[in-house]
Amino acid sequence: MLVSVEGIYRNGRVELTENPNNMPEGTFVIVTFVTKNDIDLASQGIDREQAEALRASLTTFSDDWDSPEMSIYDNYDAAKANS
Image (cartoon, rainbow, N blue to C red; front, side, top):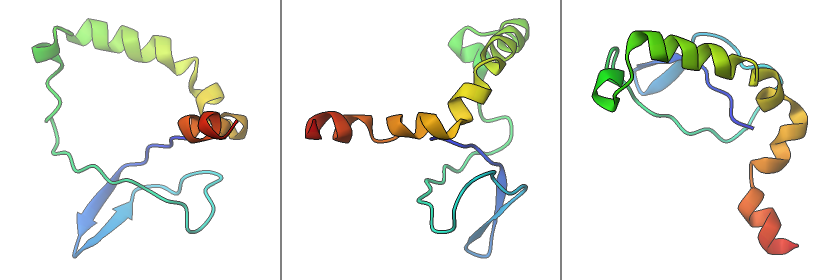
């Protein structure tokens, strides 16, 4: 399951702006550093109106993506190799 949470990097630590739901202590994470306004959608041919429409259309899937049942796909390739 992929869960995104914003945070701030300070003194060698990442401080999360909110606690992720249903994440047990010790869960593996990957941290990607971005600076504000670094994502230039226009360079990808996406204008503000298109970005808003895309976000709105994908929001309907968030409950499914975040459900515990979807964690089966977290290691899909490894599970498929073992079957």
